[in-house]
Image (cartoon, rainbow, N blue to C red; front, side):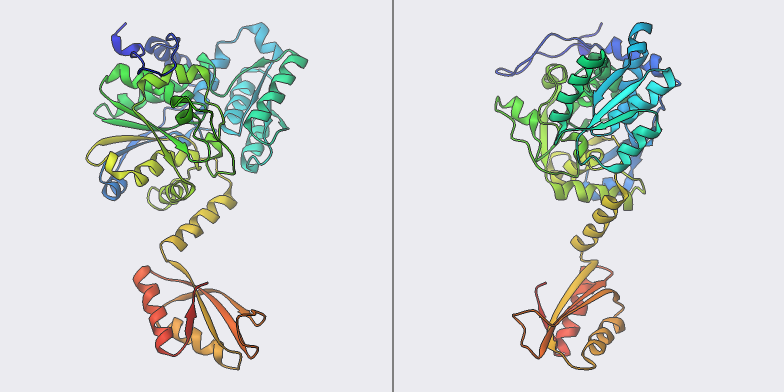
Length: 418
């Protein structure tokens, strides 16, 4: 076995444990899941490369049958169960993607699957899990509470508990993603991988380092859930809040993934909600692919820290595409607002006939597309004989929006901040 297939010596002060997943294990998992899990495409993105200054390669894990990388670990883990374990069935806690993967491959292998999901899990993930044959139980305010209930069900019904990340079979299966990525793009300088429980980055790092020892591994966490970052610093994690990246909203990184991945990860980048939103929107508008918040983490990090990757060949794992359509629509509209392609002009003026017609004429003449108009006579900071007009307009870009605003002011309309 090559030195690259073992964990490197951990940095001083960082917790570690003996290696329990090897490159040979990941190669065996790749053979085990072959024909049962799609080998997803790896493609170079010219547009994202131009945008970020890096040479960007994408691995489209959102194109799996259940739309996430979780199929790799689920298929590998379930395939290794004994006939007696299969009869008992499995239970797990999941925000959705692990649930779908276990339900699908459990159904395929004849293994009963029960999934505990936290309250607030997107409906699309609940529906998919049930459609694939899983039994869904909604319990707990977050992943931790859902996990506690899953453990109760395990004890009550003698189920086999299958963690979404803290399981060697799961980590080994997820490592096939990194294996394929480096086989398809062997010249990569860096991999950028979202971190929830840590299974994907740990397994992929082991595989990638075996194939290319000098490759740099970067993790990505949501600012609301920086559990890996806190663990590295020896601090208790401070995690809370509703994030668009619910797939990586984990309060405590897994013991096994942390021990395996920590020595191999160069840095963990923390990104904000706006970064995730922008990345989701860019995947939809630039790459024409649907990506959930967690799945867009790699691009979010690239957009927030471009100086870290400029000039490098960077691989981004697009790890999931299960986003609620309502959330996707909101993200796309919010991005239009950020780009000033959807602008609200607030005008304070007289409440008299023809006032609205004059405003809309100015906007229409300059090619602005009026989406909505709100006419407010009850605003207390407006004279009783006046009104507040909020006109939402679709524009071409920031310059076009500025042109319309100046034209309205030139006509004598008073614009205020909405």
